[in-house]
Image (tube, rainbow, N blue to C red; front, side):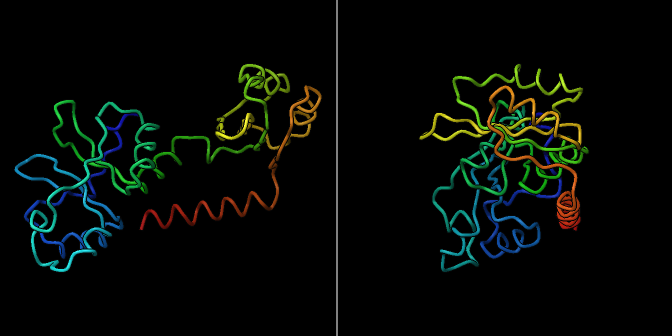
Length: 220
């Protein structure tokens, strides 16, 4: 999924002539802590709630309150994973999206991305979760998939976490089966370290209830 497909029409940009008071009002209304700012049809940067609250005269326009604004953005053909990385890198709740001529097209926000990911990934799919710990040098997704598929199951999604001070990888697998005992025994037979596993239980019901509550909140 590309950034152009992530644009939400719910969050308009501010104008450079808008006041700090208006910016805070819009942030409260749209449930974000950042907003894009435009001047003469051009994207000039992103304003944050924290920066505005540091100013004294909020009735003044943004171009009077700020000489310079940070300018994080992604291009319209950027993959959703890179969009998420940019949001984390710049610690913003809203990410502007531009075309290759740096024309402002719109923006996306964290809540909108979370809703899209939840509806297009394996989060809602029935299944179990296995967390493996492997040496970086030994990691092979092909071998891991072979073990899972050898037990008549499929990997719905995988996620890898690494630490700069460790030679280990933590591999999280979402499997399309609820009963994982056979798969777990096979991993152990192949000397994989199983850090954790989550199968069908009342714990799953708690996760689903929490997920449904979050989705209800995001739809408010």
